[in-house]
Length: 204
Image (cartoon, rainbow, N blue to C red; front, side, top):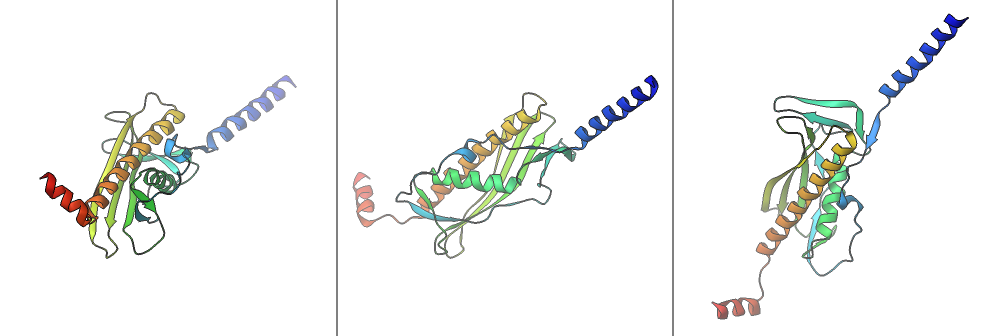
């Protein structure tokens, strides 16, 4: 009887262990941009943000990599796809840029973005890496900006919560850099008024 009871207990405990190891755990990047409220619309250069895409391997499972190898955690997963996080964070960063307003109007410049990294880098340094490739075109399809913004944030321990926090930090920084570059490109392409040109000529 005692032996049977111990065997049954071992089976039950073993089943619990295996179920725990096979159950995915879901995480969300600790990003300020994902939680920020959108400000009221202001007078600004209008921009159309197209749907953000991501490289095919950047899906639900969290990606890790070294200098020469990529892999995916079986149990560690994002609660949404990286492209969804990036699109919301980028829209938030653009809305919080005073010179930019977002619209669905097809007659304004358009911003295309692709997430090319959303990774935990294990070596040579333990960091989070978020990289976003963007292309800004005017209403006629002419290229105004094309650049990849890549940001790293340190990961201080092996906890998946710490990893999610670091990737959120890198996401905030990357999308803020995109918003600043887009603002500068739109400003450079905006014709100045005759009065502004006259004042500039007077100062010169």
